[in-house]
Image (cartoon, rainbow, N blue to C red):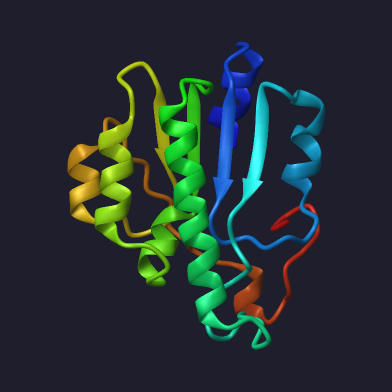
Length: 158
């Protein structure tokens, strides 16, 4: 989000496509509304896919379909020329959860115009993505309230 905010502050157009988060209200979506048309967030997820967090009423097929629709949205954003920065939020988690394939994501990377910035977020980036990236930052979980049974907190996790 920080890179997107810096870009929007420089009057660059930013589109974030969220591949895991569901349709619930989140602080980041509300915070960027006043930044339109320079910053927008598109939801392409149905919620968490980790078994202990997943809503059992949403079949995995629905998660896959939402992520696949997100790939279409991502390709349009990347190739349209409308955006200076495209962020595929939690796309690496979507690969890990088998919602999208590594080959599909690499195809998006290949489709990126030279002047555009494409950001892939999530943990455990496959070597194929790291090899093609210009910049790789690794965040490592050391401690999280969830480990002590504390549920997601407004303003911190959403």
